[in-house]
Structures are given as structure tokens and as C-alpha cells.
Length: 518
Image 1 (cartoon, rainbow, N blue to C red):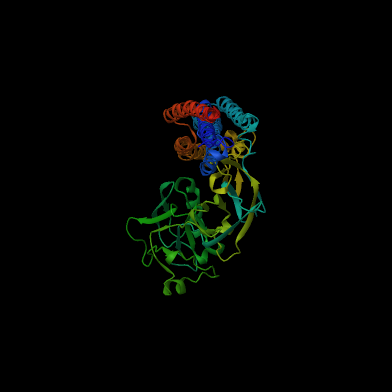
Image 2 (cartoon, rainbow, N blue to C red):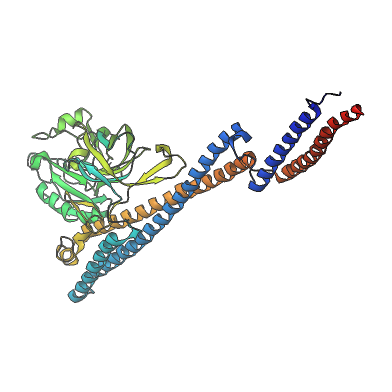
């Protein structure tokens, strides 16, 4: 070829040289950045996948941090609750010591009361001051707020978890389906018209608190028998009442508490009494409460099979549906634990024993603490928890004679101080309040511990595993393989050098036509 206007070999050499130089530039860029993808054109599909993975990685990183921070916060809370537990246990020791009135003087009991007052004040102080950063932990600011709770139906309500999805409040509907009952044995005496015992008798009364034996003389009014049973009620857990407040209607032995664990057992000891005096007791069949009439319809209830002879009867736990979920009952208490609602509630006696009444409705209007434990801000990756106040005025809620009492009732001058208990000769109510306070704090510590162990730690391990695998996947897509890139760089360098030499030869080829001109 002897044409000089178009040097095709030179053009080809230039194009190949440019390609080799671009290839060398790409390899140098990847080796200097350590990334295989530096811009979209390097790998469009890989860039899209890598960016999505990186977004997940960033969310997982913060999810792990959230779990670690939540764990630190709960550990701080648990440490404060541990101190409250120690104070409550010291109060129990002081109460047990003060109950020994035969071996402790009034001055010693007064000193114990001062220690109890100080411990109760310290519990409230811990409640007010326990904090994590600027977050108050135990003053009730992390508890759920309730609205519309009818005290005639609900005595105590504590929300452990509530989920607000698409709403600012959560409605709670409690529908009692089966009534709570006490254990009850009915007795009309053989001579019901007179309402007296026909012969002397010795009876054994047993209940959840213990067993006692009473001896009743012949011809005693049933009101005297009722009084004798009630005099030992703190020792047996069984009390008695006249039916319809009328001796002619008979009397009932019943457990003081409601629930399947409450029972009453009454037995006549020794031989039979006078002729015709069989001391026969009756219990309701199928847990149906016998109707109240005046006079009490003994014959019709027995003949219809509504009542049968018995020496022992157990109570029954309340049964209810809460927001469509079957709640577990324990006496007057109900507990439900669903993904949207965790609730412990104590019903009043009126509400728990009347399943035909309208459902009780109230609202959870907010509050609680929400933990974000995943890379996506969605309800499925969030866990709520309510941490109630442990102030003495909120701790140990217990029904005593129909009213709710708290731990501060044990302070000097209050209803259940040491002095008041000594005067009444009965530490039962104070012990129940203190036991409820200890149980409340212990259960809260257990709930926090279970959350930390089974939710936070497992979440951290799961997210850490995801972080590891996603990082490996992103690295496989985005990071440069130095062995491969250096080999490709060497190739590009050789080709660039060869291309430069080839271009030089191609340019020199056109000069050879000068030889044709002589």
C-alpha cells in the first residue's frame, strides 16, 4: 500500500494503545482504592446489589449498638432494683423481729419501725434518682399510661407491653366469661327453723392457712358457730357467714380468698351427735353458686341436684377474654401475654363474680420504653416494655378489706405500721403487702433479665452473624482482588508498551514512499 492520506495501521495501533491505557488506568484505580467498583460503569448490577447490602449493614451496625445500649440500660435498672430487693428483705426481717412481742420491748419495736421508715424512704429515693444518662428508670416515666380504668371493675392494672400500630392508643376489653369463686360448704343445721346446733360437736376446719379444731356445745345458735369460725380465720383462711343474715337459712363456711388454690374443708370428729343430727354439709355442683333466697331453698336445691353432700370444696379462678385472647386466671387476677399486649390485672370482687355484666373497657394511651432492635424501622423489629415506678406509694399493691394498700402503709402512723399490727395482734395484712412488694420487684428483675438474655443477647448474636455474612457478600462484589488486578495491570503495561512501539512503526511506514521519488 503506497497511500499516505490515510494511515490505517497507525489508526489501528492508536485504538489498541488507547484501549490498553484505559485498561491500565482501571487497574491502577482499583489497586489504589482497593475497590473493584469505583463508579457505576464498573458494574451497574453489582453496584445496585452492593449499595443495598451496605444499607443493610449500616442498619445492622446500629441495631447492634441499640441492643448493647439497651443491655447497659437494663443492667443499670436491675442494679437499682437489687438494692430495693435488699431493703425489702431487711423490712421483712424487722417485721418478723417486731412480731415477737414477748421478747422485744416497745422501745425495740419503735427502733425497728424507724429502720422500716428509713428503708421505705430509701426505696422511694432510689425510684426517684435511678437514671441512665438523662433517662429516669424507676420513677414511672417508662411505664405505660392508662385512661378510663373503672375502679368499680379493676383494682390493679399493670401493662408490661403494648403495641401501637397505626394508632396512638390501644383499647383493652376485659370480658369475664366465668366467675371467680371461693371454696364454700353450706350447712343448715338439722333444726333449721330454730337455727341452733342439736348436739355438742367437734369439727376440724382446714383451709389454705392451716387447720384448727373447734368444739361447739349443744343448743348453740348458728351465729355462735359463725363467730367461733371467724375467730380462727387468720389461722385457717376460712371464714363463715349466716346465709341471708338469718339463722333459719343456715350458714356457709368459705375460703377467704378466691381461686382454685383456695379451699375449705370441714369434718366432724368423733361419733355422731344426737338422734337426727348428722351435721351434713353441702357444696354447689359444677361450681354453680346456689341462688340466694329467703328462706334459703335447701330442699329444692338438693332435689334438683344443684347441691350435693361434701366435706371439701375448692374455689375457682376467674376466666376472661382480653382483646380476643384467653387470659389465664388466678383468683381475681388475670394475665394475658400476646404480641400486642402483655397485661396483669386484678378485678374487683363485683366484676370477677358477675360474668353477665358488661365488659370492662379502658385504654393504654402511651408511655413505655421502645427498643429498636433491627436494621429496619418497622413494628416487627421493635419491642416495647413498661417499667413501673417502685416508689413506696406504688409498690406492693394488695387488696386489703376491699381497698388497695401499698408499701407506704407500713410507715409510722399508717394503717399497717408495727404499732398498728401489735394492737390488732395480726401481721397478716402487712405481711401480704410486703410479700407483694418483694414479688413485684423480683418479677420485674426477672422480666428485665429474661428480656436481656432472650431478646437482647440473641439479637446481638443474630445481627453480628448477619453483619459478618453481609460484609463478606459486599466484599465479594465490591472489593478488588489484588492478585488478579496486578496480573491484569502487568498485561496492560506490556500491551501499552507494545502498542507504543507498534504505533511508532506504523508512523514510520508512511515515510517509505519517499523512496519512490528517487
